[in-house]
Length: 390
Image 1 (tube, rainbow, N blue to C red):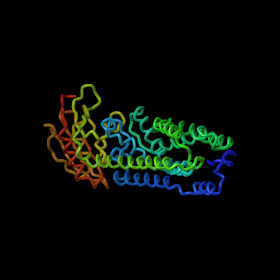
Image 2: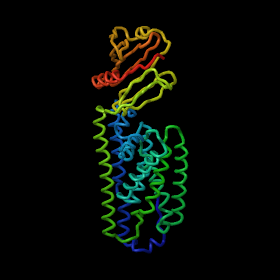
Image 3: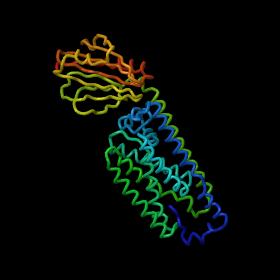
Image 4: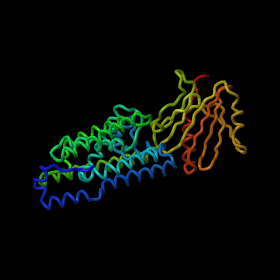
C-alpha cells in the first residue's frame, strides 16, 4: 500500500526538510509492534502445544478462548485473550502472514500507538459480535486483522485531502476486493464469520477518529500526544490484566466444583453422570457415544449398549495380559482396568446395571497426567446414577 501525497500536502509546512526527514524515518522504521504481536501469538501457540501435548483444541478453554457461557458468568477477559489464540498450524500460519503483511504497512501508516489500539479494539469488537451472534467457541486474530482492513478502507474516505485521488482509488479497490474475498471464505464451515464482520466494523469505526500519523499535517500537540500515549498504555494494561485473570482462573480448573450432568440423548434417560462444567462435549457419529474433553486435555469417552452381548464379551477384547478388577459403581457390578499405550494412559470402566445393558467409560490422558487423570476418573465414577431399566 503506497501513499501518494496530494499537491496540497506538498505545499504545506510538511514539505520542509525536517518534515520530510520525519516522514522518511516513519516509512523506514521497523514495525516493532507487528513483530511483537507475531512473537506473542507464536509463543502462545507453542505453549498451547506443550500444555495440550500436541493438541491445542484440548486446552483452548484453559488459555482463554471465546466461550459464551463463561463470558456470561463474568469472564469478560476472554473477549481479549481469544485474539491471541489459534487452533492449528494452518490457522496461525494464515493469520501470521496476514499480520506480517498488513501490520508492516498499517503500522508505518498509523504509527505504533494507533496501530496497536486498532488491532486490539478490532479484535475485541470481533469477539463481541461473535459472542452475540455465534454461540460456538472461537479464537484467533482474524477479527483484529479484518479491523486493519476496515481502517485501511475508511482512512482514504475520511481524509481524502491527505492522499491523491489515484492513490485513494488504488487503495480502496485493493482492500475492498480483499474484504469481499475473505468474507466469502468466512462462509466455510468452522470459520467465525461474525468475528470477521465485527472486527471490520470496529476497525473502520475507530479509523474515523484516528488520523494516520504518516500523513498527519497538523503540528505536534503535546496534550494530544500525552492522551494517545495514555490510551495506548491502558490498552497494554488491558491485555496484561486479561492474561493475568485467565491465568488465575486456569490454575483453579482442576478444583472446579461446578458440575454439569451428562445423560444419553433421550427424554427419559436411564442413567447419568456428572463432570466439571469446564469440560467440553465433542459429538461423535450417531451411536458411538460422546467424548467429554477437560481443559487439561483428558478425554472421557462415554458409550452405552442396550440389548447387547454380555459385558464379558467386551472384556475379552482387552489387551492380552490385562486382568480387569471387579467392583461396583452405583451399586451395580463393574469391571476396571488401567492401560498404557505409547504416551497415552487409559482408565476403563464397564458397568453392567442390567442383564443385557452396560455402560462403558474410557478416560484417555497423556502419560504425564496419569495420576491426576486416574483421580478425576474415580471422582466421575462416584457421580454415576442409574434411574431405571432402559
